[in-house]
Length: 111
Image 1 (spheres, rainbow, N blue to C red):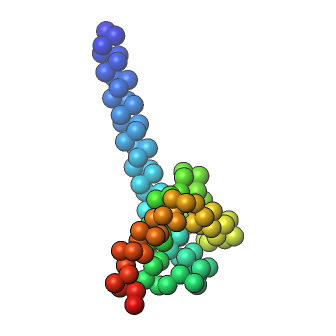
Image 2 (image 1 turned 90 degrees about the vertical axis):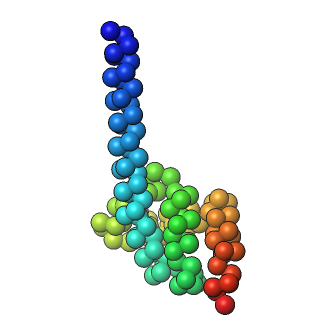
Image 3 (image 1 turned 180 degrees about the vertical axis):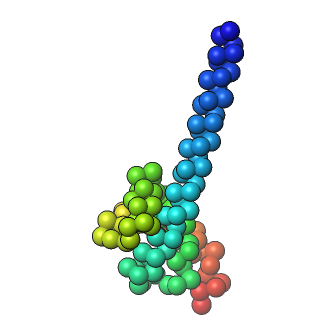
C-alpha cells in the first residue's frame, strides 16, 4: 500500500511540475512581445537588428516575478514598471554576457 501511495504522489508531483513548466513557457512567450515592444519604443539606441537578441537575453535572465510584470504588461500595456524591469534585467552581469555573445555572433550582419 505504501508503494502505491508513493507512486501516486510521484505522478502527482511530476504532473504538477509539467504544468508549472508549461505555464512558465507560455508566460515567457507572451512576455517576449512586450519586451520587444519596450526595447523598440523606449530604447532607441538599440539597433533594430539587435531587438531580438536583446529580447531573448532579457527573457532568459528574468526571474518569475519579472516575467509576471512582462505578462501583465502584455495585457495592460507597457508602462514605467515595464521599462524599469527591463532596465533591471539589462543591468545584470549575466544579461550583459548574453548580449556580448549575441553581438559577437552578429558582427558579420551589423555592418
